[in-house]
Length: 116
Image 1: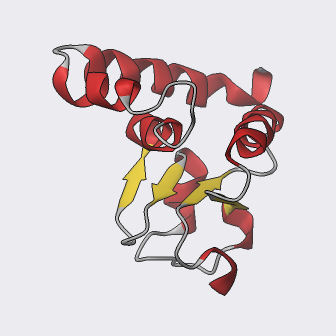
Image 2: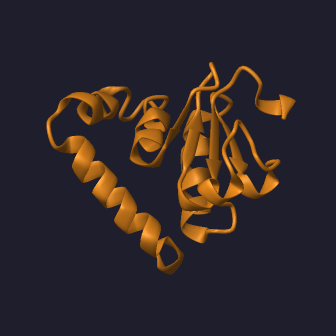
Image 3: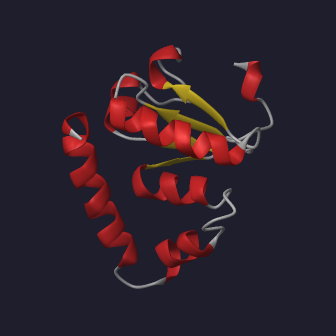
């Protein structure tokens, strides 16, 4: 676990082709800024989160070990990229309805991700 110490951590389903494709794509952009790890390689529980919870959603753990999941985790991750910077995260937090739509879209994609 010391490999990602001091770096944000993205925890995703490494057995999901859709998840792995996007993790690889974003990881190339971020180089060494963020560490990516499949939940399958984590102890159970990890940071007081059960593996069964990791199966359901993407998690982002920041440098202070604060955990975010689902759409918020994606926006936290995207805030480290040059492309979208922090703009999408600000929309998530401050634009009325954007958080709700983001979580709905996340739910739909997560539900059907193994078919994508």
